[in-house]
Length: 400
Image (spheres, rainbow, N blue to C red):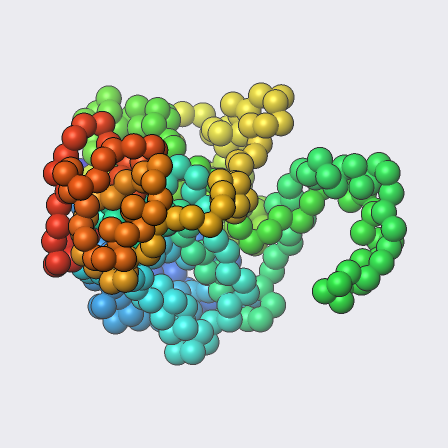
């Protein structure tokens, strides 16, 4: 049941700044939004994953055909100087350690078929991402952890409204030292001419197109609201700072922002807080029932994460190790000639030569011919003895 009765059969909930629509996005966009009326579409559509998710997603192979009617609808409702921001994760090809190109093909389709311009690509680095898919990352050790989502910022125009002054970051310690001690203007080896203007203190730094943001929500008001009412929370929520970054940079107060794949209405919650008009559209009634929790308390002017920060500047940053910290010499086990196609568990040994011999001869390690010594290299789950498993066939691997 709808929480209150409305004349509009799609309208599920109304707030001071916006509304939640329950129903099919294409139908609602066609019947409720005029041409060139929207300033920003901020959304995270279902990803084109191999494994089906509870919130519904399309196979990567069918993704472009599925997305085409949405692209046409987005192009129609967006203002010429408006923006379309899509948070989209990658996917693995079923049964092999290679990546799908579906999200790159989506970007090309939006530009070449629907007339969008790529204003800039962003990358959301989530430090809390798990090392998946486990088969390639933690078992065979032939790929590294996939920890980013792509974010495509597009516009019908090459000149969408935007200001990076809205999303500045604190100066780094090294930049503060440079401003304090002075800088000698000179040309870098790359050819870039660094002028005296580089040493002007503008109060803050222009951010890169890498957004570092952990997604570790575990006890928010939204989750408590759902738990208390036995409502299943949406399983794929982006943190509120992600849409807020683009909403601040690309819109003014009272501009209209819509999210056609709203889920738990994070976008709407941000817009309500920073005074943008908004519309969230979601096809699942259970998810919009939970989304009501985002509007069940007094709206604050700052995000939940920002309001809990203390004065320790270390809380403002994530650390990312530079390459080479653990590199030590050149004696390492030889790479498997078949690229890891054969599955087995391998470990390091203090005798690097013996390991190299096993690999070069194509011998699969067993508990009999490979003594456990030294730290684990290939198998992180080494609490107890286990038989080395060998399989010539690549299994079906779950992506995120």
